Structure formats: C-alpha cells, structure tokens
Image 1 (cartoon, helix red, strand yellow):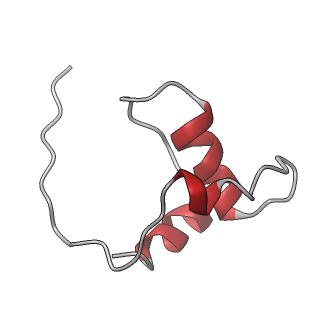
Image 2 (cartoon, one colour; image 1 turned 45 degrees about the horizontal axis):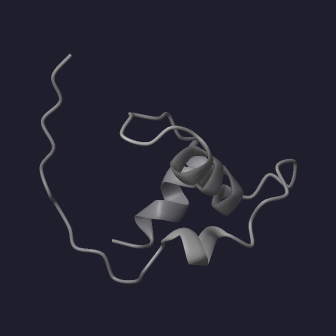
Image 3 (cartoon, one colour; image 1 turned 90 degrees about the vertical axis):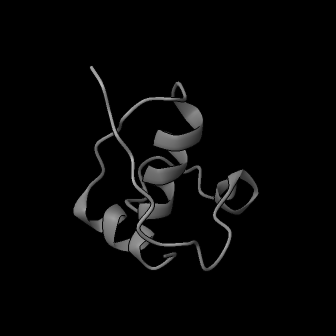
Length: 62
C-alpha cells in the first residue's frame, strides 16, 4: 500500500499526549478519549478510522 499525504492546514493549538492524557475513561464516549486511544494507545504509524464526532473535534484544531 502507498499513501500520499498533503498538508492542507496548519495547526492552531497543540493536541499532543499531554493534552489527551486526562481522557482515559474508555467508556465516556468523548472524542478526546477516542483520539487518545487511537493515536497513543495503539501502534503508531498507521491509518485509523475515526468516528464523525472525533473527526469534528479534530477539525477544530486546524
């Protein structure tokens, strides 16, 4: 598989491990928790599927 990534926007605010660390209650349904799990709890360097709610949350950072 080959993936091409193109930058379409710059980040407006930081959303790293330290910002997502408080969101660790896996059954709370928050988009921050989903992103924390998919970005930092699972293997890195892979493509993940996000819910519409998590995608909308991320959109606010760009």
